[in-house]
Amino acid sequence: MLRTTRTVFPFSYNCSRPLTRKLYSTTTTRPLKVSVLGAAGGIGQPLSLLLKLNPYISKLSLFDIHGAAGVAADLSHIDTSSDVQGYATENGGLERSVQDANVVIISAGVPRKPNMTRDDLFAINASIIHKLGRACAVVAPNAIYLVITNPVNSMVPVLKNALAAGGVRDSRKLIGVTTLDSVRASKFLSQVKGASPETIRVPIVGGHSGATIVPLLSQSGVQLSEKERDEIVHRIQFGGDEVVKAKAGAGSATLSMAYAGARMTNAVLRGLSGEVGVTECAYVESPLYTDQGVDFFSSRVTLGKEGAEDIHPVGLINDYETGLLETCLQNLKKSIKKGLSFVP
Ligand SMILES: NC(=O)C1=CN([C@@H]2O[C@H](COP(=O)(O)OP(=O)(O)OC[C@H]3O[C@@H](n4cnc5c(N)ncnc54)[C@H](O)[C@@H]3O)[C@@H](O)[C@H]2O)C=CC1
Ligand SMILES: O=C([O-])CC(=O)C(=O)O
Image (cartoon, rainbow, N blue to C red):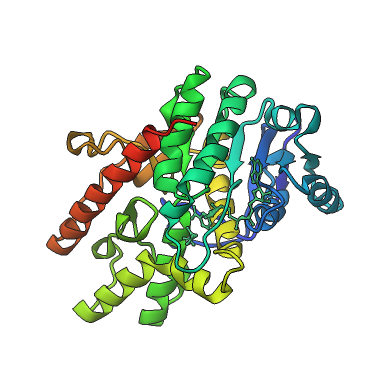
């Protein structure tokens, strides 16, 4: 197979090399197809743009109930190697868009408006995720699924059941995207400390909503006063609300989410391509807290050819973080139960 080396992507992210950020460089050996569902949306469009720049991807497939053909036509003029194709609902467009996909990214659904919680999106988004999952299970049983749609804490369990109903049961291939919390943590901490965000890594465990977002600042190597710590934890937990408020009814984070989604997708593609030691924090079916009735949990995972291959424990945490984790687990348990109990 032809081997090509390109340097086009704006970031390289590797938890095993946390202090490096450089132009993306890879040797591609395997053509990979990535499908984006919800591709014409606020996240879908900039995410698809970033994916068009990713040299791991040979086929970029865009599906939306409105407007994917236009987005695909636009992106297809960009002079990178990948082919872009847009699909609408008609003529089995969804099924054709995900057929043989290696990775399916789902950002289809409704975003928050001010004074809404992520959980307020549950009913409408669960129906969408379930429907997409049922269709995808038939034509893309081996894909890795990345769920962006909120509430992530419940949508991943919803998708698990939808895929399982179609006979697809590999938990390593079902991943909730919590990367935006990691991105925010690096940025917010860097602002407090006057450091470069590239040099700061904070493991974020738990889930992706308010008190379920547990930043392990004690593992960041950054010293903080109690006041600084409390403020930064609050800002990381409720960073999404800042954007929802600022957008004043026009939706929630899209551009920073596209960046975070592209980073997570890139990590998954590196793992799929055989790179060893690729890790990110992600929300997966996890054995870590099943004894407390919590079957899904975000922690550091190692990504490989089968998806989330190793799930790492939270590691050493202090009393303050133990308190945050207890609150997180209580909340997470309810969101997971709600997701698993969803009946379309
Ligand atoms: N995981 C995370 O960290 C984050 C998650 N989100 C979530 O991502 C989701 C999408 O947000 P935005 O892109 O801003 O919303 P948006 O409304 O701009 O875009 C959503 C897109 O989904 C499409 N869509 C709706 N039903 C569909 C279906 N059945 N099949 C295919 N496409 C369908 C719509 O046509 C639209 O283009 C929301 O639920 C939001 O809360 C947002 C930010 C961060
Ligand atoms: O806040 C929202 O609804 C969108 C989101 O998940 C985030 O920005 O973290």
